[in-house]
Image (cartoon, rainbow, N blue to C red; front, side):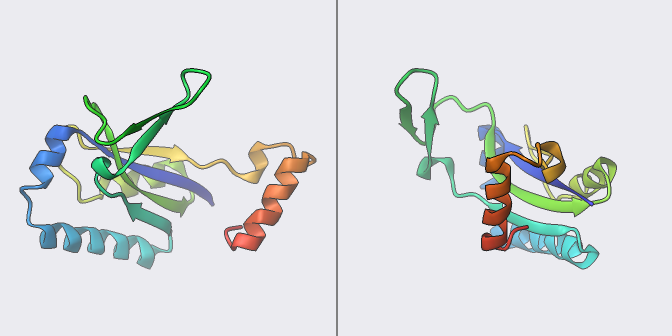
Length: 140
C-alpha cells in the first residue's frame, strides 16, 4: 500500500460560492465521503482548514523570513484541507479524489504520493531518528 495526499485547493471565487451553500449540506456530504473512505479502510487522516484570514505565510525568499498575515491579498489558489489515503495505487487515489463532494470555480483536488521509507537511504542517521520519532508518535 502507498500513501497519497489529496490536497483540496480553491480560489476566492470558489470560496464566495461555498459561502452561499447550506453549511449542513456541506457537512453531510463530506461526512458521507469520509465515511465511505473509512468503510473502505483507506482513510488515515484528513482535516479541513480555517479561513485564510486566520493564517499567515512565512516567505523565505530573502535572508530573513518575512511573515504576512492572512488574508494574503491576491489569491490564485488557497489550500483548504487534505486527506491522506493508504491505497494500492495512484489510480485508486485518483478514483477516490474524483468522488469528493466538491464543486465551484477553481476548486481542485491535487493527488500527491507521500514519501515512504524506501525513498531515503536506510543508513542515514536522520532517517533512523525519524523512524524512531514515528514510533513515538504512533504514526509509523
